[in-house]
Length: 113
Image (cartoon, helix red, strand yellow):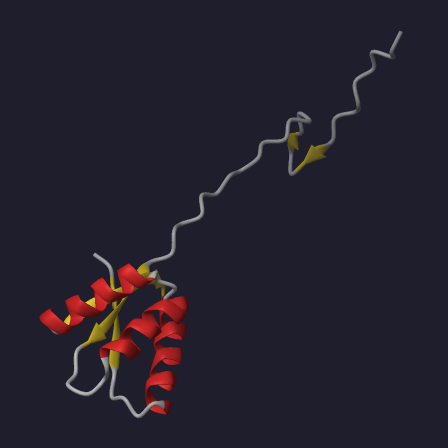
């Protein structure tokens, strides 16, 4: 038969410890999200915009064409929604690719509502 002795209680700052450990759970707050916006211009080709949407923003061909058409018809469109760091990285990469092809493509980042 097991020994029924209880472990000795230890005092801490004048309080007795009960041996009960309570886990404090902190809920992680979701990071704020940001929209990456593509701006229409008269020089960047539709093919390049579709290619960027597929390679940098990982859109399938149908979604990339739909986003490109929206940007062309409305002047601006959402390429994707990401955390700030990811959005910033995608904008920087896209701007470098556009500059290498001598396209004046412009993008911006704004917080989601």
